[in-house]
Amino acid sequence: MTEIIGVRFKSGGKQYYFDPNGQAVAPGQGVIIETSRGLEYGECTQGNTMVEDEAVVQPLRPLVRLATEKDLDTVAKNREKEARAFSICQEKIAAHGLDMKLVEVEYNFEGNKILFFFTSEGRVDFRALVKDLAGVFHARIELRQIGVRDEAKMLGGLGICGKPFCCATFLDEFQPVSIKMAKTQNLSLNPTKISGTCGRLMCCLKYEQEAYEDAVRRMPKNESFVETPEGVGTVSQVNLLKETVKVRLEEQPEAPKCFHNCEICVVRNGKGKLPEGYVPPPPEELAKLRKITPVEEPHRLSGSVDAALYGHTHQAVREMYRGCLLANPGELQGRTGRIGFGILDTDSRIMNLHSLDFNA
Image (cartoon, rainbow, N blue to C red):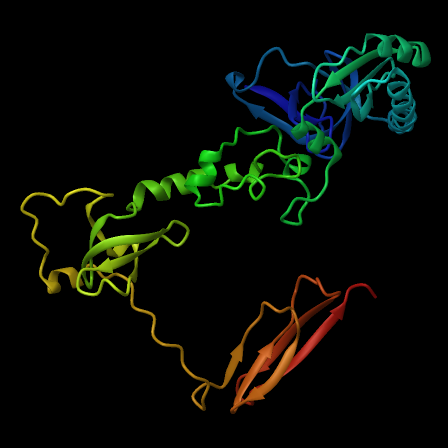
């Protein structure tokens, strides 16, 4: 067994494993690590853990020390230097007339090496720029060309879902994504609708791919011939998320009916001919396939219903409708600035609404 700690050098970056060197390190603590680039500052994301020797690549580089106040001051000063280096490099790029976009500047912990990350549509001859920058900063200069996905990861932002980029928050590395995944998930094949801000296919297509592939293996294809509790027919539509199919019954082809996957028996998967000599089972045998009780028509609000509670709108509501109490307690997430909840007395059908202003 080998004792390790997990360390990230950037927020949302890849986690690396190091030898704690006999020290107890808690998640969230700053550490100084010896890397191939020299001493580096990182944040512990996984405390002391024992793992199998085969689970990590040996030999592990050792932890030098826990970060001190002096180390944290050094890191803060490096961040200030990076901002200054960024503006100077942009001026030099313009002076040399290079077709490149500067994305980020990174100082190493010791301050003797500076990395400049940039994007460009083609190859760039930046040898003269490197010499110019080395004369200004008197440090080792490295220019590294990155792709648009790496640029989005460094800069961050909000995706079309309204949340921060996955790559900038929790993705350790980019997973391969293909248009085939969108096709499997029945998404639009229009690249503009399934592409992220970086212009590449969205990383989240990978998240549920295994679940969709499993559903595809278990669900019948379109135009399959199936047996249902109400007769035999042909599949006209497949819903992978709900695991339901719409079937055009031979006796009622004009009105397709919906069945759960567990209620059908596939005779022929996809287009083709029926098995030779196939005879549909009698109705009483097909009826045994039903495992889900049909949904009844919704009850109309009447005296038999005392109260109806609902949500979704995040707005607190309390009113009477045809003798029935309609109530929405509000919301607990506080999106509107107030946390709302209700207390319902079932005997008197009185609901008291309460709210908490967490900004107060």
